[in-house]
Length: 115
Image (cartoon, rainbow, N blue to C red; front, side, top):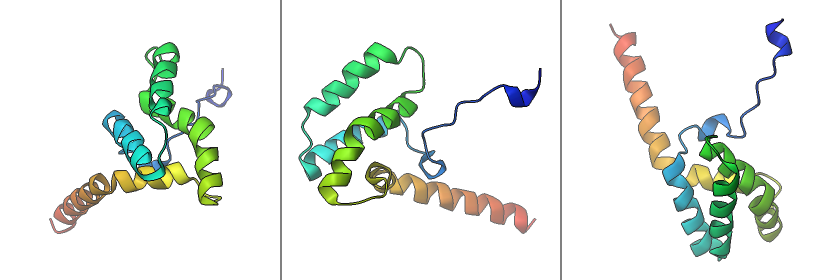
């Protein structure tokens, strides 16, 4: 059996959002409720569907699947945008993590570069 014949599911999480974790999901919904007046029922709906279908899968993957299916179309229409609004919002919410990670990676690279 060839390695190529085995399909590995592609992640729904974009590479630039690899630092987005489970604790950021609550931040997303709180920010969307405050900024876009997203109904708190969406968070409840997310939690119900997550509890019903997750069963050991990656919660962040599930979050992006849920948001892409249910919330993304509304935000695109509301904001008259064509790009992924939820991805941009998630990037905004984890901007401090990204900055810290980038700084740390630079320090490690510079350490070994000058050795």
